[in-house]
Length: 300
Image 1: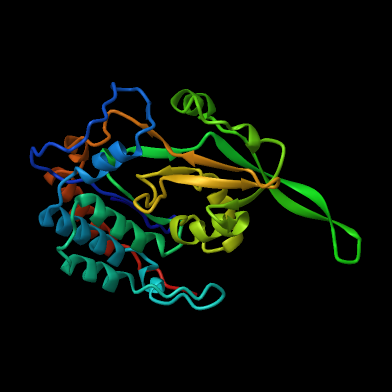
Image 2: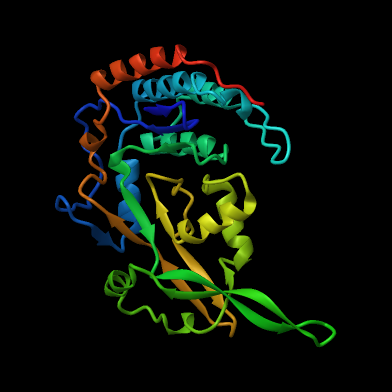
């Protein structure tokens, strides 16, 4: 737990002391290396292979709740007022999560917790899953918005933004993993639909529930332009990711893009989540006492 009262920011990263239970994961990777897999089902097995444990759950929630109680603007999360009018009874949500013990895996608990924290839409209060979930869903493309001229009903020309696709940093790894996938329709024409939704709608809808960098819709959309096609399991919820993104181009052609999984040696390894042990809990308690000595921060 790292809290900075002067910056009015809170970053939460949690790990647990875990028993020696083997994760049901068949993906492996050498240390200090990024590996790639076209097998999304295997990646899901790695995420879901970390066993659920009520002790880990309660320790995590207790640590977060204590930290938030000492965080200066915690009271604002109940109801912010205008202009954003966010109403998130955060501590009540965490308490309700604490009372639940029906999770099939630790990953399911992690996703629920991350959903609650993301709903704050606050870049200073974000939750990161522990290192055993370190995999990212990536695509061979990135968005490139351009201004195109379009005719209005009156025949006049006006500039409208259109979403084009360009090669991403993972293009070579992607084409090596999916050598038979024809990507030629993706270039030099706008994307009109993604999984049946108009492109801007698809990005903004996803960003509203998965991108927490700002409570401003425009800033959140700009952040989602990247994270929509680069979904880190550490940073955001990935359990609801479809098997593929089906993109429809302006000429009517469709390309189904399955996810490529980028991961490291910690992925699916239970011991990789042994980040915070008793010594860290002691540090958290010391930080809590320190925060109590600071002047309380109130909204002006």
